[in-house]
Amino acid sequence: MNAHYDWIVVGAGIIGSLAAWRLAQKGLSVALVDAGSPGQQATAAAAGILSPLAEATASGSFVKLMHMSLQRYPTMIAELTKESGMDMQYHISGALQVAREEDREQLRHRYTWQEPLGAQWVDQTELKKLEPHLIGYSAAIYDPTESQVHPPLLVQAAVRAALARGVTPYFGSPVRSLVTHNDTVQGVALPSQDLLAHHGVVIAAGAWSGLVTDLLQHRLPVVPIRGQVISVKQDQQVFRHIIFHGHTYLVPKRDGRLVVGATEDVAGFDSRVTTKGLTRLSEILHSFGLSESNVYVERLWAGLRPKSADGLPVLGPWPGRKGLYLATGHYRNGVLLSVLTADIISGWATGQPDPMDLTPFQPGRFWNTNSTKERRQ
Image 1: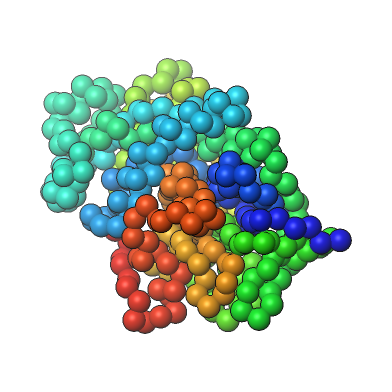
Image 2: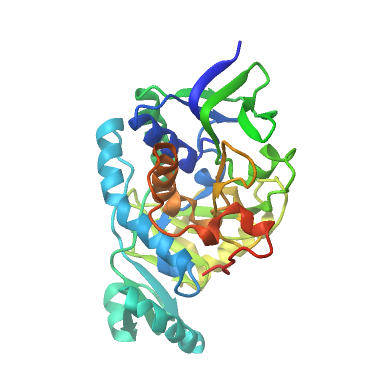
């Protein structure tokens, strides 16, 4: 027999799980569907960095979206802690974007647009005070407000809170197809039954979102990018802040682990760890001046991040299809953007206006050459 809900959310990563929880808070009946277990893909691979400035390349809508989500994190964490009873290891650690002497001017150029957003320029003397054990770097951009969280705990808490509010889980149930009638998406077909939505279906399936929508007229240009990450332990944790050098990073965790990443390569849906990836991660460790003699491997893993054709998130209704909404393509920033994305989805369900202009992120930008486009910024 078919099952009926107000909303169906496809994908139980951090975005889908938080969205299901937020929808249930509004008193809506929600089905949360995932082909596997919650948070086992991009969320499980994430380092939990909440750093808008390190991820953006210029001021604009993208960095505004990230900043807005970061600002909502403390309130969301307080709510979710109360409803789930879990500690998600969220804390404001601050983040440093560091430079060697040869790339100092490049970093200085980044600072020209980051200063109005609250960033601070740090010279070598001040950097030594902030991170005494960091070797070989001469300057940094410092944002003391940037934060971190433990993604697996975050998604566990979101699922627990969602289920407590009556969300129905369909885990281990891949979507075979969308259920459509004329120009309306009415639900999803699972191997055992159809789920029907009275109001809408949200596709938040990360790198798999394009497979769910494959039978529709347009192809969704979201592809998997494999990221390999390692966590290590030292005899003594020596770093205090999140530290970036380009897109490589160190993230000191409260439990004593140091997460180091990340590689990026195109490998389809293959999430296996490679020896090449391990070599690259070892190089990253060495580049930050860590002694290999007292660094011990705790865990090595990989995940598939959903990257859109222009590197920006895909947020909004599917053009020409009633009842179908997309929340995918968050790439390296799914954990950071999950809070605002979940609130946006809740707004779609309750008729609330978007918190900012989402035109640069709407799905139609890929198929309408006249639509507003924005590069990743």
